[in-house]
Amino acid sequence: RKTFFPVLFFMASIFFSFKTSLKPSSSIYMQEGLLGKLEVEDKFYKTDTGNVMCRFLLVNNVVQSCVDVKTKQSMLQYADILEKNVSTLNPEANTALVLGLGGGVISNMLVKKNIQVTAVELDSRVIDVAKKYFNVSDKVKIIEDDARHALYALPNRYDVIVMDLFNGEVASSHVLSLEFFAKLKSMLSPKGFIFINTYGYLSSQAGQGNLILLNTLKQ
Image (tube, rainbow, N blue to C red; front, top):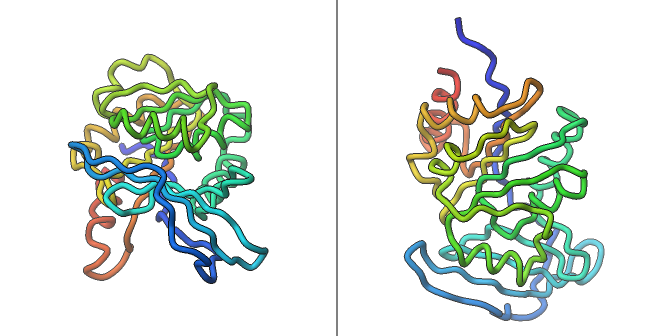
């Protein structure tokens, strides 16, 4: 008999209330590497609530994180969606595992909820950038490792697991397998949930990738 797999599967939506870019972007960091081009850039935007200086983390020219430089708050809608669901589904969560650090936006959000956060990130450049340019909290325990490999070295069970693994727009196939998700499930606390962030659609030919992922989760 199949057991319930507590997964919240949601689409990454990079929706801003941006109206107009006021000035060209200013690149403050850029480096090519084996895992692609990593860049941090600042850009002023006119929004519904005023002018905002936004800081972007891009991998291979794809936005991974975006924050208001002044408030340090995320400008990505998916971060807000995740925060609301954590509060609703597991308001007593004490521990979290974040797979894919990015700018540290999700990890910082969880820390503010007094959750002990362990984050796994393969690219050492991303870790350095998150610390230097995105103010990732020093309360976040960061492990430099491949996500799948790291799981077998982590003894804990977690109340929240966030899978936010991208290289640009693509997640590696080895973290989309039945074996990987079975391992994640085994690491959940009794009331724990897994949040999976992904790009794309859930219908028609364009949604085939995510439909296959959903089918994997059902097995």
